[in-house]
Amino acid sequence: MAGSGSSMLYSFLLFIVILSLQEMYRGKLASTELFTIFGGFISSLLFLVSLTFIGNFQETSGMKTGWGAVIIAEGIALIAASTVHRVCITTCFLFSAGLLYEVNKLSGTMLSKSESKARRL
Image (cartoon, rainbow, N blue to C red; front, side, top):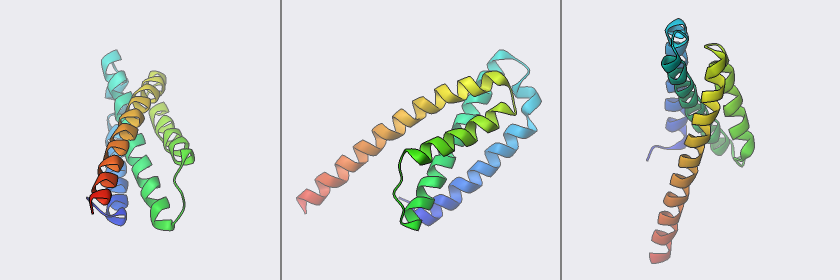
């Protein structure tokens, strides 16, 4: 697994790349209904990488990560979605909620595995 510093750097670079591509193809993403939904999905990926960046930044700073990081990352993603189309805001929110659920479930699974390894030692 990558360390907090390198994960923070990679997530920041991914954020810049995804946001740049989204803005370059803004007209294409707003052209049809299917592309508009896809634009919302792309914005939800922005939510995921910005949440990773904020969480790793808080971890390296020694602060506790909580719901504030989720709200800030969601705000960033929704603002980015609003530059493409109004419907992208709604689909971004829905996709982000699904991604947050899956990340939380994955985090719980990884935490329980690490706790069981610690008990064995």
